[in-house]
Length: 278
Image (cartoon, rainbow, N blue to C red):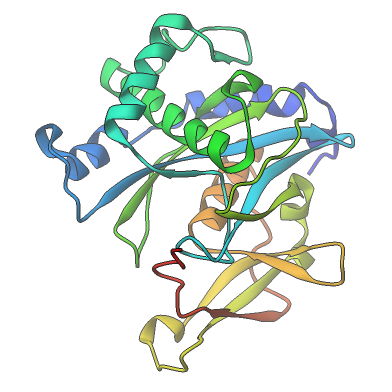
């Protein structure tokens, strides 16, 4: 990997936007299964997340959150975002369409997305506003402080009835983080970390209750993120897949995920699937 790929400020977002424009999306098909004929199927949720890129200390980083004990999947590292609120997010996407407040890195409005048909364009704007609304609530990111790069194919979770629709944005300028109670902390993870074999491990999942749950009898690939305090955070699951797929797509290279050089463990809390409310 050419080190300039992550250090030349204008190179990476321009290349990412170009690759995203040429990536087929499945938004129409997946969304029609979740919301047939516009009727919400409550047993399966749609969620928008934003892959946030920030240029800092002469390289690009992902801005990620670690989920607090108050929400599902507590302790997981993820992209800002959350469940679609159809009426609110549709209203916001219409405002976006008519005002052009969010623009692409080449300063186009999102009224014209020539690489997608009308229905897919509408869904991209919908999940963009969904994700940015959540990012404002979770970390204080202003929607006016981003440039849109593109969208990634959806990802359906295995053990949660949820399909994720990821969008990719560049944070224009650093800002003061303002975490709400859904966020334990914010991580800035260098993209270069993903291209080092020593960053990866096999993850063994354990249940806090000690139950012999068959879901915990397999190993998952993960990225080990040093926390700067002699500890580490673990990136795994859906967010791991979304970010590694994005980097492989943009770089044109395979990441050194396997063979992993070590094994780490993670114990899921008894509230992992529900979160602590109140």
